[in-house]
Amino acid sequence: MASAGAGTVSGAVAGAVPGAGALGASGGSELAIDARGLVKQFGSRRGLDGVDLQLPAGAFLSIFGPNGAGKTTLLRMLALLSRPTRGSLTMLGVDALEEPDALRSRVGLISHKSMLYGDLTARENLEFFSSLYPGGPDCARIDELLRLVELDHRRNDPVRTFSRGMQQRLSIARALVNDPDLVLLDEPYSGLDPHAAELFDQLIDRVRDGRTFVMVSHDLQKGYEMCTHALILARGQVVVCAERAQIDAAAFRDLYLATVGVGVA
Ligand SMILES: Nc1ncnc2c1ncn2[C@@H]1O[C@H](COP(=O)(O)OP(=O)(O)OP(=O)(O)O)[C@@H](O)[C@H]1O
Image 1 (cartoon, rainbow, N blue to C red):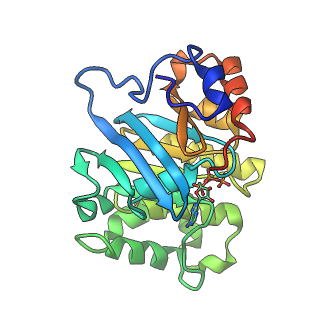
Image 2: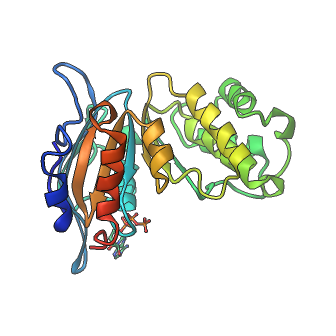
């Protein structure tokens, strides 16, 4: 499965990593993501250049790659914030290009930008985001989430008075307010101190149950440790796509380093 190479990288990868874009989706297992031939054209520049990805439900995929490799472009597509120029994308069994609205409530996004309203309290933020989904605000769930992220005692404080780590915890609650099946993490550790990062780890562990995660990370070691599956992009193409169990850690690091400097499309 190590697939479509990016320039010099493909030679280094060939034969080194098993599998392909199928990520060990064994017969019969449900796919959370089934992307085929995704292309994103920005004028004369190509952000994604034929990306295939088949990810089983319940997996944790870490996406790596140098600056400009296409990680954000791919994540934005999965978050239904951007459409591919070409290709197909099915998520959670739904055609994401034909029926994006049917998917929005099933996908949550946590990025290094908190996407919270500073003048609203923690609770008001969650009520607002909850009200965007069918059924309106779910007060019991909001209370449960505030306890989960250990912000119950700050529920009535404006978010602008929160530390970065606290905002990040609240953004997890925001992303989970609609109980999504697919959670997208865009460099969630960016700007967190070691303690806040540890708390964030614990929170992610506590909300893993049955959900599928996709995380973009520049931290090779952390991203590798957390994932069940790994994807390396360079120049908008898939360089490596494999179950972690199939990847030797040292070889993976070498493969990743080989992409640095060839990522910008
Ligand atoms: N809105 C846009 N308009 C034009 N080009 C874009 C746009 N968004 C992304 N690109 C280009 O697409 C390519 C991939 O960008 P992308 O942001 O996905 O990379 P990335 O892997 O997330 O990089 P980084 O690690 O720096 O965040 C780059 O060449 C970038 O310049």
